[in-house]
Amino acid sequence: MELLRTPPPKERSDAARNRAAILDAAARLFAEHDVESVSMDQVAEAAGVGKGTLFRRFGDKSGLAVALLDARERALQEAILSGPPLLGPGAPEAERLLAFADAYLDYALEHLPLVRMSETASVGARYRIGAYRFWHRHITILLPGSPDADYTAHALLAQVDAEHLSAIVPELGEERIRAGIRRLWSDAADPR
Amino acid sequence: MELLRTPPPKERSDAARNRAAILDAAARLFAEHDVESVSMDQVAEAAGVGKGTLFRRFGDKSGLAVALLDARERALQEAILSGPPLLGPGAPEAERLLAFADAYLDYALEHLPLVRMSETASVGARYRIGAYRFWHRHITILLPGSPDADYTAHALLAQVDAEHLSAIVPELGEERIRAGIRRLWSDAADPR
DNA sequence: CCGGTAAGTGGACTATAGTCCAGATGTGCC
DNA sequence: GGCACATCTGGACTATAGTCCACTTACCGG
Image 1 (spheres, rainbow over the protein chains, first blue to last red):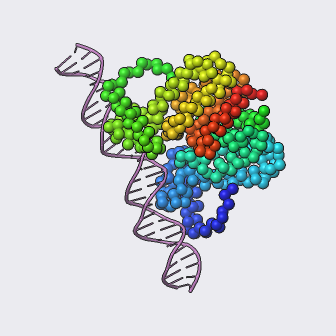
Image 2: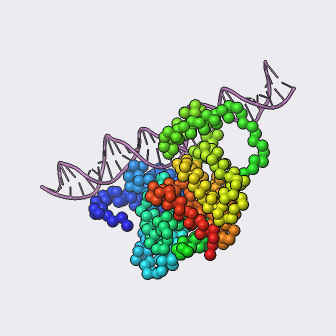
Image 3: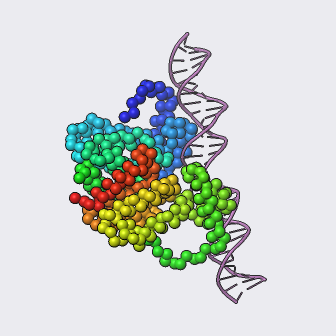
């Protein structure tokens, strides 16, 4: 989505080293302890850098989460843009929509605490990050018959909000949620 | 919903005075300044009480918001439980559901920043407060034909999450959102 | 190799939510 | 009235996110 107009001004070698050190340390800490309970100070400490460096690189806690999820997220976006059908282009809209629901849930449920951090840390973070716009646009395109695809896409995405999923998974379990999402999304794809 | 089993142990008069002072001060501050930007210290200061008192009374920031919204929320619950039809008992389920959607949106959109604070301040706050359970149960009852009314009710409520509404109102405007919600909720009430 | 400079660094600083508890105070009972 | 005691109070304290800026360092052209 976001094309880089000016070629990235080249990152200094010490900066690159520190970015890697931070991502390593953060991945380790988040794997070992509860994501919620790891502080930015701990991450900085474990990475051997100052707090200022950590925040300059990643902006805030949700930015750090986004960076850690980057690879998985890109892979999903890649598969959507140019992968084989069902998920990628070529299949009928309704089927592509359901394939997306499944793939997105695979991703979100596997990394739920991190995804939640990426959406929650600062107010409105979820709706500002580029990924949300990407998913929204993708869904919009897959709802050609909808009276208001724009609104509908937001409504479908609300069902996979990490905070929302975290709250209902313990209550309903993943399978029931997946089934419910499939049902409601395919109804939305096929308006009467 | 939550019945009080033990009669409330009677609140001391100084405590009652302070609760009122806090609610007054908070209502005034939130009316004058952006809800986000008012700190609990400011509220305590303006109410002329210590911080400890403020937190003992209301638990946290979201608890304070809940208390401020209490009257409006109770009125809506009252109307649902024993008010005249469409909103209250008596009308066909699908119509009651739409009446609820409208009434809830009246409430939420009118007080959006406060409602958002009541749902956001602490992690998962929204799903823990009694009101959420009430709305969920109410919707469940109005979806007798649904394959999984429990899940569906959560999905419909996700559309009126204050954080979600705050993000899409500037983009789509209230009317389009109300229309979208009416459309999707009535589809859910009437499964094929 | 060297000097200029933009980019990067780290830790002190601020703001804020929320905790804790020693001491003050209202209430019920005699 | 006054005693016993549960409740309440306020502010000092902690934890944490995020800002700021004087200093350092990698890089580039000469």
